[in-house]
Length: 290
Image 1 (cartoon, rainbow, N blue to C red):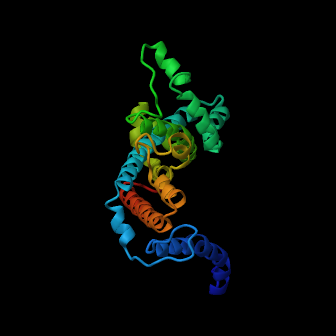
Image 2 (image 1 turned 120 degrees about the vertical axis):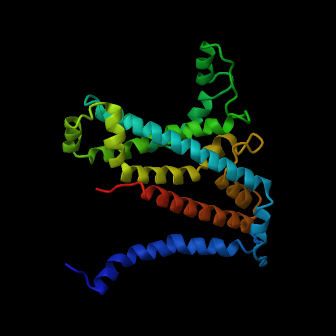
Image 3 (image 1 turned 135 degrees about the horizontal axis):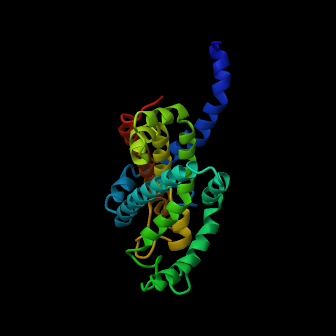
């Protein structure tokens, strides 16, 4: 039954109104504030045009936070997708305790990451941490994981992979459920009996739509990293773990430079949008829909 324009408007009206009020209006306000020198709490401000954006390109902290965010994005996205897909394949290949494993691996996603960050802080403690005790059994020297300039960002990426791989696993398992059993049986009759051959020639192509969705979700969530940085390292040591959202928070609520923080927010949103569009366009060409 075809809906009339008035009926269609009634159905789409509430969602469109919420989209405008909760997404477009705040983004417009931030864009306007980025053209001012407004200080948080001040009653007046001045229009300064694109001066905040010009300052961004000369800000070493912004460039460092941008580079750290991209590095974190690559490490967490690749690691969580690889582990999530591998875990999904292993769980689906075994009938016993499947529900238990799904729950256990998805638990980090449902847990409060702030609370889990405290646990990880203890695990990575330089003297009494469990991780250093384990590597000490194999003759390696203990490391100050969260205070070492070369290891801090990698350590946070490990926590991010641990937290996000369960989400990737659940989505890949849903994609595996959608592969018809008849195709698996037909591949065996066609001589595709080796698991590796069957994975690359049958399962992976049919997981194309799921993979596109998983990559997009993991990438966006990696770009939004803030909580573990704020709790565990506060951007240190020496800006080694400073990321975009943490820089925005410091500028807006630490130094009260809301105009400058708004400019950083606009750049951040633009980067997320462009990255998502490029990712969608690049993977869409290699994705086959049933």
